[in-house]
Image 1 (cartoon, helix red, strand yellow):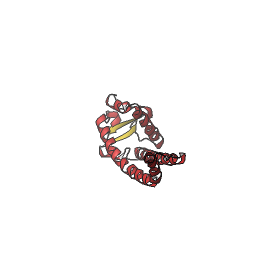
Image 2 (tube, helix red, strand yellow):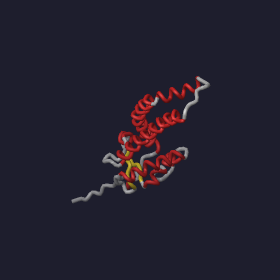
Image 3 (tube, one colour):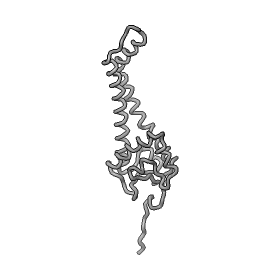
Image 4 (cartoon, one colour):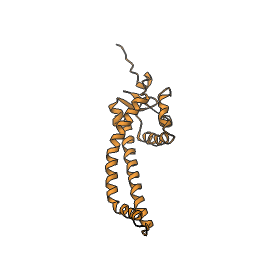
Amino acid sequence: MEVRVVESPVERGEYAGFWLRFGANIIDGIIIGIPTGIISVFVSIFWSGAMMELQESTIDPNYEASLSDIFVFMAGAIIILFLSLLISFLYYTLLHSSKWQGSVGKILLNIKVTDLNGGRIGFGRATGRYFATIISGMIFYIGYIMAGFTSKKQALHDMIAGTVVVKK
C-alpha cells in the first residue's frame, strides 16, 4: 500500500503573480462598481433638492447658501461613501473568508487567498487584510505593486495580514 502526500499550493510555491491579481481586481471593481453606482444615483436623486439650492447660489448673486444646505449636500456625499465602503468591505471579507477563499475575480482566474500555511483565512484576518488594502492603495499603490517583486508574490496587505494568494 502506497501513501501519497499531497502538497498545498503554498508548499509547491505556486503563488499568484501581479498580473493575475490585477485581472481579478479589475473584475471585482466592475462587480462592486455596479451596485455602488446604482446606490450613488438613488442617493443623489434623493438629495437633488439640496443640490439644486446650492446651484442657485451660482446663478443668483444675492442668494447665500445656508449651512443647512451645505450640510444636506455633504450628508449625501458621506452616505454614498459609507455605503460604497460597506459594500466593498462585505464583498471582500465575506468571500475571502468563505469556502471559495476569494472574490469573484479570484474565483474566475483560479486563484485564492490563504494563510501562510495554505489554510483558509477567517473573517477576522479577512477584515484585517481588507483594511490593509487601503494602506496599500494610500501609498500610491506601491503596496499592490510589491506583489510583483516579493518572493511569495505578496502585496503589502498580504504581509500585514499574514496571507498569500495562490493558484488553485
